[in-house]
Image (cartoon, rainbow, N blue to C red):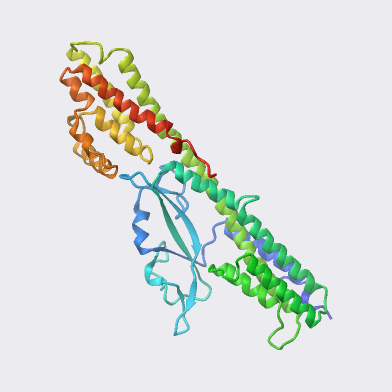
Length: 406
């Protein structure tokens, strides 16, 4: 008669552990292929509006909900996203519900299908958590660098996962040895509890880690008939293993996502800084070529040429979208360009952006263009150099030069 440990549903001739490895490989494949059939996605109602913001990356690539950051066109803040498994509880009627479900709403294609107060047993909930990064690009890059370091090879989370997998393997090996005494089972239970406590799993709120804790704890105990049952313990250990395998796959995806987001943010940062460098270069040209300064009189043709160059600088800086570059770009535009050269929409947006930085007073100053049109070349030159200094200071700011976490 074949041993029970080799009779595993769907995997004839395989041991419990071998079947677990096959099932684990399949679960990892589901995660990497984006199989979300059993997942319901939700977001806090107060954060729902952030999903309507424009995407940071305007390319044609497929946009997967919660994977690519967004930005606020007035403040320049960057909004990144992370996923968290929702905590499910059972209500008085015995129905599964999302904890604090009244604060959340379902997003995506399943919005009108499910009720967060009465969820099917086979469904899990994923919470989309928007994170507003007011500092903009560099802080968002540091955030993503920290995530990829945490979940990447040698990272804290990867180390934790590997430690738990090693503990499950050790637990399995003990029960594969065969008959155990009650004294030995108590030792295993004590060691398992110590390990779970040391890893912080006894107080875990994550449904996945709570499941791992439950499986490992039960594996180190007698069965319902008060028997030492190695086969049952191995099956429970396998269940814990499969849960951790899913977490491991998710960690790898988190690292890959953070790598990609970091790289794309770096490209946007390079573009923003390039706009500043180009503007500084044009201003240098205007000053060094005495296009403004150095003349007590300036001809109509020269005025037209200078205004054309100032418009080019203003338009270039108008392409800047993100903090920490959005405010200095907006201030520079206010300093160099006259109101009469902006459309009403441009003026409205400029005022809103200046208000965020409490810099509305710049609108009370004469711009470079105003001085040029008034043939006041001396003050035009001073204002031009003031504007250039705003750009230079932003580029050299130490916070804007640090793009990795410490």
